[in-house]
Image (cartoon, rainbow over all chains, first blue to last red; front, side, top):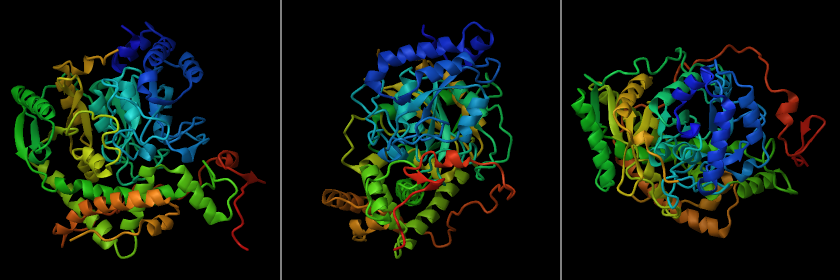
Length: 479
Length: 93
């Protein structure tokens, strides 16, 4: 078996024992990439020589010493491009490391390459990339999910051991579910966003995509913790996140929110998720019926707040300090207009316009401020639910991966793909998606476990117990 | 209640975007649809509900100068520069 198929937990033991060297690992992965990348197109940038050189110098005694990790193309890695899959960042080279990158570097990780995404993380299918689409490793006629579709396709397609993604409305969990890997969105404030290109700052979180829950906990330990450069980061010390690797789910109160099992959802997805709930019950957990009554409003709230924040955050791309600049501008306004109109793709323009509109005079109360209030109600829903349970169990996505091109002409329909992930960002809670089955046509199905704020240990522990009893995560995509 | 008529070109211009006629037509209809969906929020009773605002006590650092990007690094991506400054079109006539 190729080293590229093993978990990070196993590989770091083998690296530390000097059974293998990081260079073998990188070479194996590059070989897998050569075989599959032409079909999947998960990467936007690969620096083979740099990865091999870093592997050569790696220190296996460090927590992630010599472990290659792929990075979503919206995180600054010193000296690398950081395109955000946009033409507007053509030619940009990061002059610094994001804090998440610096922490991985400190833990000994090797950076393998940059992964594809929807432009500025705006999308649910990775079809909004200016650098070409990414295909689902389980069925190349289908989308990998998004916006961290490159990261999910790389990990699910076994051409990366792990990857970083970012999640504003489901952008780690939904593609993880659709590509058969584990995707964690930590609590808002758990990981510093310094050096992550901002989309919607009150929602954005960085998180890992991995093969196993244990690997997710390993990466989270390296990434978590306060950073003076992101004052939303929490002051508490990072934990191990998987203190009892063989813990049982006995006595766990698992909430089943009725709003997450809706008419029209895919029947195989619903069956697989309900069966997972039964597994928890059979193993000593109690299933509790709960309600999150404001769930149906989440999409509307999200697309008001996220676009409003994006319209402000993306104002910085004006052709002055970095990235693309329109040629021979008449004056400075012409420079702004032409740079932005030539540089941004259609979904980004659509969202900037929407965000500008909901913040414009006369409409702020009706849209933006009303959405902030409903966001408060959504948060309250979660607090109420967690009074009677330890975690919530839901599907990650209402359906498995859809066909490429199916939704590109209907943005509203595309937005509805995030219906089960978006509320978690609005409330700020942590959630993990892990494989819980396959459809008859061999497409992965994802299970979402949502925890109370800073309750990552609870969901990772429960997810790990579930994973130990199943082998979904060991299935390989077709060659 | 129906969604407001939005003049997509005007709003785009506020955001320093110039749209082609095709984009204007397409975005007008798509954004109209999205706003209709968003209008469902108006039905929700939020009389006494406070707006979500950023945390009152973020973990602020001391306001002390610390080393930052070098001038050279900060200018390394500028599309045009001279004398350690970024060059832009003339603003004042």
